[in-house]
Image 1 (cartoon, rainbow, N blue to C red):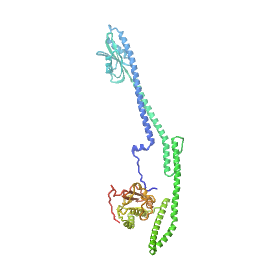
Image 2 (spheres, rainbow, N blue to C red; image 1 turned 180 degrees about the horizontal axis):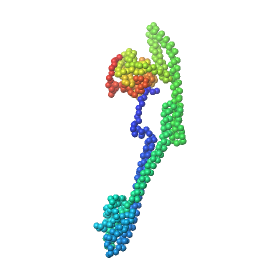
Image 3 (cartoon, rainbow, N blue to C red; image 1 turned 180 degrees about the vertical axis):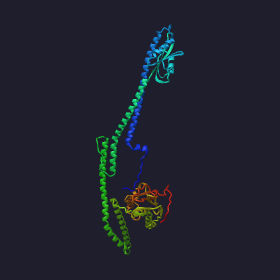
Image 4 (cartoon, rainbow, N blue to C red; image 1 turned 30 degrees about the horizontal axis):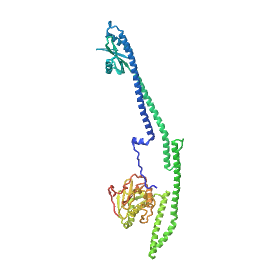
Length: 528
C-alpha cells in the first residue's frame, strides 16, 4: 500500500557525461573505434618508420656501392695519367667534369687544397662537416651519410653523401665527395604515407560500421528486454520476449519470460486473495449493520434507564453503551476502507477554507484536550482555501488531532496552517511518545501500533491514519509523518489549491520548527 505521493526526481547527469552514461551503443562504438584508431595510428607509424628506414638504408647502400665503383674508376684514370705532360690539378678538374656529368645520378666535389672542383649547379656546402672529419681521420676508407644537397639556384634536396679519397702518384690525397639526390625515394615515402592515410581512413570507417553492427546485435535484444520489462511493470503481465537461438541473449530472454510468468502467477494469487479479503470485509461490514442497529437500540434503552439500576448494572450499561459506540465507529471505518479498496470512493469537491475546518475540529476536541492536559496552539500563514471535499478534510484533521491528543502525554500541541500559490498545508505537532524514523510510513498501516502494549486513548479503531492517507491521495495531496522517540511526532497534510495542480513542494516543512535547525515561524493565530 502506498502512503504518500512520490515526487519525481531526476538523477541523470546532463551534458556529455549524461549522454555517455545513458547510451550503451555510444560507449561500445566510441570505445571500439578509439581503441582501433589508436592501434591503427601506432601500427601505421611503425610501418611508415620501418619502410622509410628501409628505403633510406637501401639508398645509402646503393650510393656507397656506386660511389666506390666511381672512385675506383677515377683512381685508375688518375694512375694512368702522365703527370709530366699534364697538370695534376687540371686532371682532377677533368675527372670531376667527366664523372659528375651523368644526369640524375650523382654530383662530384673534389677538394684540392684551396681549389674545389665540382659538378655544375652543386655547392660545396652540401658536404656535411662530419663527413670531412671522418675522411681526415681515415683517408683510405669510404664513408656514407645523409646530406642536404644545395644548388646554385638556392634550392636544396635531401640526399646521400659518400666520401672517399684519390691518391696521387706522389702520395698526396684529395677528398672526393659523391652527392646522390633522393628525390625518387622521397616520392616513394610520400606515396607510401598517402596510401597509409587513405587505407587508415577506410579502415576507421569500416571499423565504425563493424562496431555499430556489433553494438546493434547486443543492444537491440537488451532494448527489447527493457521495453518488455517496462510494460510488465506497467501492468501488462502477458508480455514476453521472443527467444531466438541458444546463445546468452536467448538464455536471458528465457529467464525473463520465466520470471514474468512466475510474477504473473504470484500477482494473480495475491489479487485473488485481496479480492476475497476485500469482499469479506465489505460483506461482514454490511451484514453487521442490522444486528448493530438492534444492539444500538437496546443499548440506548438500557442507557436511558441506567439511573434505576444498581451501581454494578449501571456501570455495565455504560460500558455496553461505550463499546457499541466504538463498534459502530470501527464498522464505519471498515466500510470506508472497503470503498477505497473497491475504488468506489468519490471526491465531492467544493471550495473549502482549511483554516475554518481546523478551528472547528479544535473546538470540538478542546474538552478532550483539556482533560488530557494538552494545550493546543494554532498558527495561520497566508490564504487557506482549497478545492476539496470538506467531509474528508474534516476527517483527516480530526484523526490527526485525536492522534496528537491521545499520544501527546498531556504536552502542548501546535497546529500550523499555511498556503502558497499552489497548495495549503496543515501540520499537527505533538510532544508525546513519538516513533522511530524508520516507522514514518508504517504509522499509516491499518491497525499498526508503535507499542503493542499501549492502549489507545479514546477508543480508536486503528484505521484513522489509514483512512486519512487515502483521503489525502483522493485529493491528489500528501500526508506525511515525522517522529522521534521521546520527542513527539509531526504530521503534515498538503492539499493542492485545485485538482489540476501537481504538487511539487509544500508550504510547510515536514520537520518540526522546534527541532534543531528548524526555521523560524512567522504566524498569526490564537490558542485553544
